[in-house]
Length: 325
Image (cartoon, rainbow, N blue to C red; front, side, top):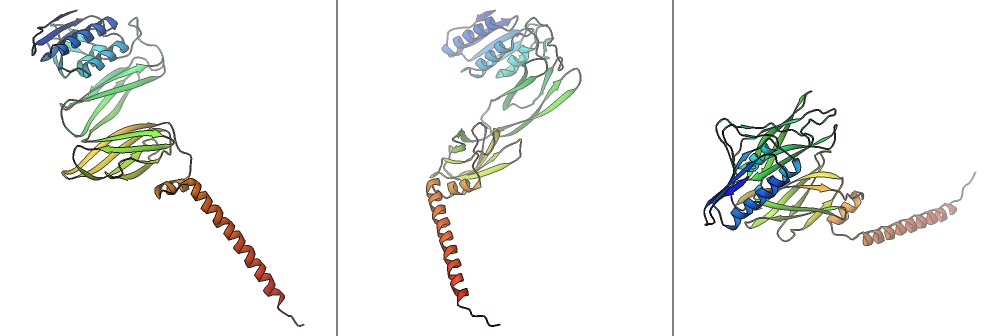
């Protein structure tokens, strides 16, 4: 491994990374990218040639590239070189990726630390990403928990100042079958802040332009149930009861002086509310629960007294009748 580059601002730093992806390469690239940032380099070019390596080190390298303050270019080289396995995801994480003639990239699969395949019902898994978009980058990898369970991890990064909906697909190939997973990435101008506390989902909106109101829809993809709430600049912190545990998708339609904008967020709810619809109405109209119970108790006593009074008067009236044979 070697790094070359001028200390002068605006220079391009060239970083050679060869061999197995591991802690040594991770620390080396971290220092090299940091040096490019400190000298205000125009870009950092990583000349990559690797057969792959550790998933944990790969993820640290990907994270460092995504957090870089200077553009990072991954160049798979020299001729005959490769970016296999973990190198695939490092290449995909770059701001710009390029390959020398007669080089190769992929496939990516989870293996044991000694290079052998993980045994188990799942067998060997390959990840194929179908994503053609210049505005948003996407990479995916499989994390194996054991021979029968695996987690698919997908990371995205916004490369340009753009908004909209972007579609792609990730394929997971095993020896037995091929699974196709659709991927949708939303990029919105509005920022939706959401958190889960005290059995409720708390929401607020942040928009660069002056806005009038926002309709926020919260959907549980597992159950298909949804709830909605309206926010305004004067009441920009509102909440709804969290009815179920799990991931919730949040979509906001915001009306601004310059037109409609959208905002998106995802929230995992761990603190759900077991109260019924009665408390929902109380919260909707701002009635404290204690006062509501006092009113309900008073009305209940009044109904009992009225019923007893009616029964008593009805008995008196019956005694005034005289029946003749």
